[in-house]
Amino acid sequence: MPAGSDPTLPRTWRPLGVRLAATACGVLLVVVCTFAWFGFDESIRAKFTLFQKSTIFVLAAMVLSVGHALARSRVVAREDGLLVVNGYRRRHFTWPEVIAVRMPQGAPWASLDLSDGTSVAVMGIQGSDGARATAAVRELRGYLDR
Image (tube, rainbow, N blue to C red):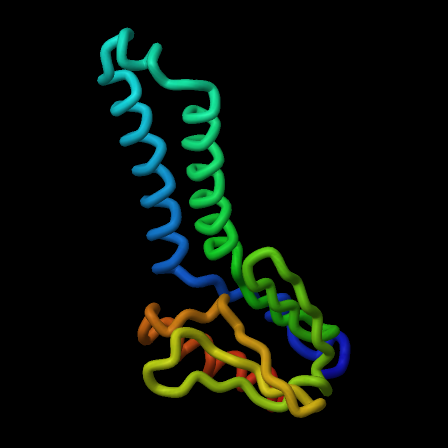
């Protein structure tokens, strides 16, 4: 795809269902833990050691970081190629490197077939989004065909 050939670029796809679920679960986790903590009597809260309190915070941070990683997944089609963000990893592919994008029936997310014979998961297009994911794959294929 030559530079300046498409006025609709950059185009970004993000998973809707995963972002909603990660946000709702993260907020719910914080709310439930906060209400549970303040629901204890002062005498019960005083029995928790620093190690026990820090363990709860570390576990909550781990759960929230996994949710954040899933929610930040995306695919960005730009003039110079595709940017794929899966969790905390970013990869950039030029247009000639990407041969095809596919998402077979029942697949959790789309995948890119690359010119070196490998494939890369594209968690920014989630199969759980249904018709939205199918439209995103179709649109991304359109960019690859240009």
